[in-house]
Length: 130
Image 1: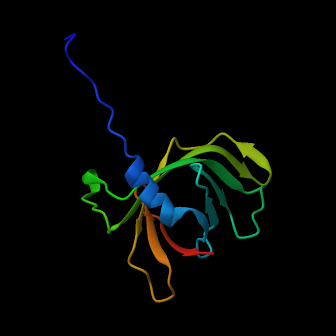
Image 2: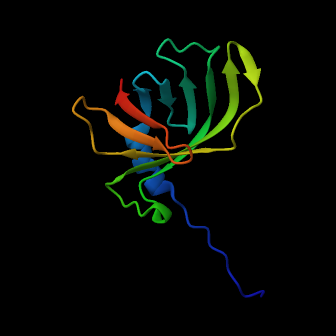
């Protein structure tokens, strides 16, 4: 066993490509307002007022490919949010999921929005870049 070498495979290139598209502010068509930062952090507000009393924040990961979902480069983006804190009416809540997985499709609707689905709950969103 001493001759075995472990090599970590980096996903930095795919993640950087996904961030090129994702980084910025997104209106979620009445279901929130999402800000994704280049440093891998996010803030998800209940609406575009960005009221810190009703939001969650944390870190995120992203990819342009996902073999498990049969997703290839050009299909869309796999986005995973890792919530750290949730505020409801100004009160910090401890009811957080460990992670939330989303698939964002590049198939824009007639208004220029991008469809996104929560893979665990099947909740649908339409994202429009601000």
